[in-house]
Length: 66
Image (cartoon, rainbow, N blue to C red; front, side):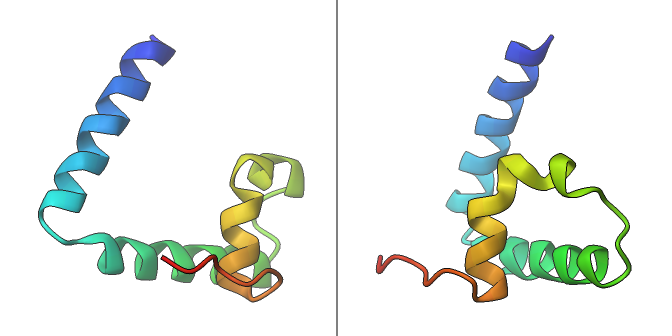
């Protein structure tokens, strides 16, 4: 089941990229993260897989140039 979810996720990401919706998705994710962190809604261990991305959005780590 997790393999199926991963394939669906990859296909969804490809569709998002093909529609040039990455900036919108990034904005939604930023809002979610800032709200979640501000109100301590999710434990840090649950965010661990996304920590590198979260650090970039929160300014803890500079984003790599494209």
